[in-house]
Length: 614
Image: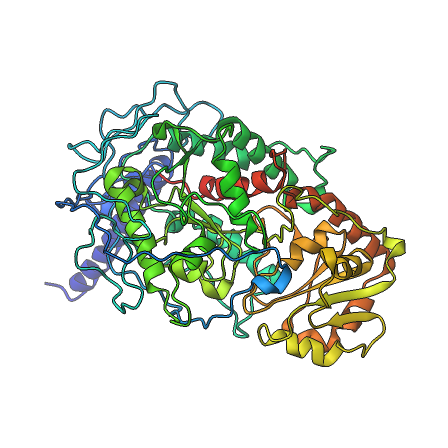
């Protein structure tokens, strides 16, 4: 063989390899351009192309867990003859001075129930041309698929469905012994599968204080990640599909900022709020549980600083409420009618510093309704809601109501408030239940000589002594900052100051919430909220910075400087907006459009709509 032959062979081999590689690259490029899904099949036979427009509501490959569920049994507890305290004293007299003893972690003790597969014969309607392909459109005859081959208990109509033989409803005489230190009862039912607390909620900044703008960002983040906040139901119902349709219509609401009843600057997005409110009035149905004994259940308190939970309970349980349905199969939401104030009055042992029997009572109630009805277990309580105004409500409901919507007066970010799920309940001080709107209003902006006013018990919390040390005892003639004012008939001194001051200081007490926020709006006074990590009422809808000032607790020494930095034009604009937003913070004996009752219900509805996932 001649010496040049091996060299030629190597050169030709290289050319052949380059030619084969180029050919293969052209084939791959052509297939990628013409058939995008086929490229993946060249490299992996296990990956199946996924269509973004899939309309399937079925989740495959999930195992359904089943167990023999025992009925909930409430432990024995000797009855206590509780006397209801007169709430007519007013203001800080009603605040309870009890040490806070709860662990802030509130870890759940049992795993979440995996959502089950939707039954094959469920009539999930097809999508129309307008909404996204994944959004089902409603049909009148849509049926609710069941979680397994064994159907759930029948939905109750106006006649309650049969109760399992051994199921007993918890009463005030059936709660765990008040002095007991046990958190679990050996005979309690395992029927309710509680899920762990939502961890992605409040990512606190390094300072430990979440500003209003940071709260708004967190709300947006939680809206985007709503699939993590809401557990998919075990089976899909017609109300679920209606909520999906409502969500689509709200997200695509037409621009409408000319409604004379809705002043656009007061809202985050007035068009979305208006459309959401219209849909709520059109379709929302609430099922109210009838179970539970008085005085903790079905006993509204209409006077004092805890009146919000009482007024809401009274109005939603009234016979002529158009939102309430007796047919639970039509319900979008389920209301748990307990009073957090009466829970404390009835069961708390004075100076025991233990709330365990209060928590156990609520757990027993959930165990009972989850045995009697299928609704709680279908969603792990995600479509259930409560309204609670007592300071202890966040800690008492944190563990066993993890997925439920909680309307809380004590809406503290550090107490486990979940943006996009929970809502802030306005704390209102009702002096006369027969005339909840008495003394409403105040002087015009030009007739308010006092720059700022505050009065309250100086020993309630750590903030008020600081406020009084800097500005109390007439240290500055423009700021009327007092401890507790002398009591007068009708509390006229207090009301007169609020009606004639430009700004009303709403400083926190033991907890972040204060009735002064709503009182300021009630008397046409611009609220100045000094309470770190407080989520203001109806935060999902209202643009609070358009009509209120927020001052960080660390800035109390600069309070006057901050108030004086607001121009006269800006102040008059804010005071005008306080008057316009006032209708959202009023109780009426017969509910009126956009009033407090409707706004609380709307916030619960709004959060549920944006949590729904099937």
